[in-house]
Length: 220
Ligand SMILES: [Zn+2]
Image (cartoon, protein in one colour):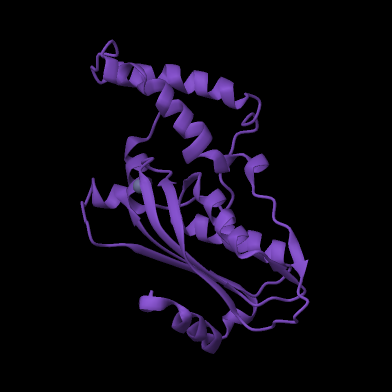
């Protein structure tokens, strides 16, 4: 039996139940093409249940477009195979100060309502022996964003991956985002946005965090 009250409460409070994206053991048994075919069928049923006439020219291709968008675009980040390859380079310059990549676009989806989460991530790190190409940080953020998400988990997944890839705990991640499930339904608050912050290592020092905040333009 579905506990509808619990489902509603969990969604409205946007609570994540684990750090890992909860995946089924059989998540990758079907190919992408098989997934598209299946979702297409199911979404057609949803549209029909809503009373829509799929014989209409404008609607007839929607189940396929929807299915392809889910598998290949919005949720491509569910598949570990799609994680961007990130080559690291030796920190030859011995650069030991903070490096900040800001205003990285967040295009994600809330896992409780499957509505968009849009905003920005700001990432800072202090290189140890390894550095990465800057665009790789953007790609990594994009990858984790393209899953059904909870903002806290998204922030933490980006942090953990960067700490591992850069082989240093000295990383900080801020995510500022609007949730369409808050602005378009429920409380319908158009202005509010959510900020999450995760950091480790040297960023436990308040002065260093303040330096990072100072480098973000517009006082993000
Ligand atoms: Zn939501």
